[in-house]
Amino acid sequence: MLDQYRKFALTRLSNLGPNLLPFADAATADLPLGRLLRLSMFQVTHGMALVLLVGTLNRVMIVELEVPASIVGIMISLPLVFAPFRALIGFKSDIHISALGWRRVPFIWRGSMYQFGGFAVMPFALLVLSGYMDAATLPAWVGICSAAIAFLLVGIGAHMVQTVGLALATDLAPPENQANVVGLMYVMLLIGMMVSALLFGALLADYSPGKLIRVIQGAAVLTLVINVIALWKQEPRDRSRARQAAPEDDFRQAWRSFISGGAVAPRLMVIGLGTMGFGMADVLLEPYGGQVLGLSVAATTRLTATFAVGGLIGFALASRVLSRAHADPMRLAVSGLIVGVPAFAAIIIAGLAHSTLFFLAGTLLVGFGTGLFAHGTLTATIQSASREQIGLALGAWGAVQATAAGLSVAVGGILRDLMISLPLGTGDGITAGYVTVFSLEIAMLLIALLATRRWLASPLPS
Amino acid sequence: MSDPEKVFPTGLTLSEAEELHSQLVDGTRIFGVISALAHVLVAVTTPWLG
Image (cartoon, rainbow over all chains, first blue to last red; front, side, top):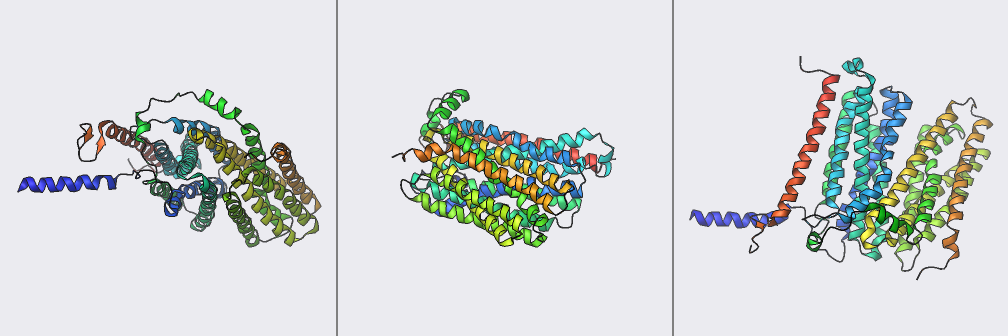
């Protein structure tokens, strides 16, 4: 009798086992939309981390915690240091050997853990950095070091999760669906950024140290929970890979063979230039609207929404166009650059002619061009990567893209502060300053366009 | 259940189970270090002992 119960319990347990483990069934040819949506949620936490680091904490540290702007600038740019390592992370995930037959999951899990850990210690590190209560008696290096550790952890975690997450999405999606997957990933990133910007703004509207701890640690928990939900039962286990001999672990050689293949190097250059050209607008449009066109704070917030809507239209159109057979994503990226030139010109004209209409149209077009360019370059990266080098290719894309985006935000921020501090008033002087910056962006887009001449001149690859 | 390598009742082989375990150990280590750091930082800001 007892034996029967024991047997019954054990069979039930062993049947329960596989359902409780995060393994996917055998790889299916089609990836259902629900599963894809779930996977793309790692982009939401990435957007959340971006907004928290670059937007919310930037403000909180300077305004409420009264940390010197130079230290804040260094802290915020620290995660950028790890951006080039994305290529290495992607490569490591390509060649990862696991008894479980997984390549991507261990990296995403570990990245989520670092990101969680960084956010978990960050509020305390920031309070120590600002000399809150007893921390005021400590030497300055304690706060600086602990805050640096927190920012570095978040940075390395976010880079790992995004690089390897995109590689996993590419692994899972059938080639004809890749353009749609890329679109979905960008839309989810945008949604994550918009929602968390609004949410963090509302939650930290009246600041208190306790609130800061709750908000950042809440973000930490959300990161881990959402990433695990996104990851659950996604990557199929490849038992044959688990038994294979370890592939050669030579990053240098793999990089050399990757960079020499096709038009990889010039494409990376175009991605960097284009991202920088479009990226600076992100931080400059709002103060431009306020200082030159005299828009109110509420109106400049609507600007951000206009920019995002432009981006969404861009992503949607790019997904549609690139889903067709024989569509060349790099050509689409080039049209994004072409849209960007008149868009920035419209913004310049808006300042000279004091026309809000031109400004809104220009902002919408910049968003649209950014959407086309970002989608096109990422799709091109994915489509040109060989099946065994997807992680490396996406790592290289991410390294260039994240570095360029970070640099443009930093440069844009420095220029903005310069504009605000210069005794130019609100007259022609400040308009001239902004016009110079926007002209610089046009110049960058034009250089990127020149670099793509080769693709436009050559016939489409069959 | 014929595979002698399989560990009952999860259906994992020994090496698979060991890999999961090593992830668990690493995770505990990372979380341990993080929580220790967080505790130290809170303790220097608002000392709750003595």
